[in-house]
Image (cartoon, rainbow, N blue to C red; front, side, top):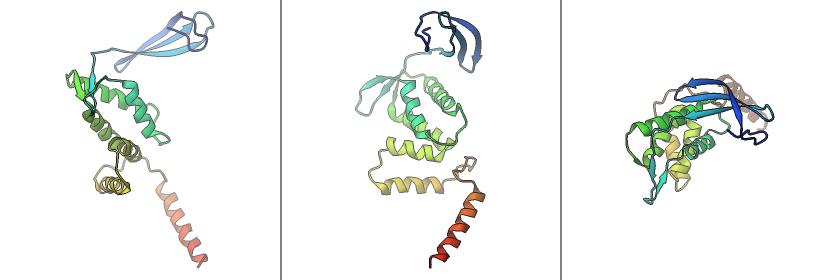
Length: 178
């Protein structure tokens, strides 16, 4: 394993643990002594994604993770939740037992998981994935989300008490300007 600090090719494993479906290894460079962590995953099989234009592309866990991370950027989500989400989606895709899966199936799984995780991340992802034609389409999706009965266990952007005090100040401020 190449050292990320100095690039030396040799390292020794100082600790190894199994975490879910991965093996976490703590390593130390034999040249500079830098310590770093690597994760190993069992590759259960090749998965091919069928794109909208019928091209076939090898499944890229990293590509999916990048899209999800981008949607979740600057959201108050627990550390490691995106990796867990990616792990779960990859496991579900491999569990289908198919060699080829349409990209639409992958997209819908991601959208469903993001809708449960964080509404803002869901709207961000959906706006790119569903390629809304105009602001009206986006508004309809937001209205549908608001009307849906998804649990409100998600962290609010602004705590309720701050929101109430803010709206009280705005009301008081607006009456001064009249």
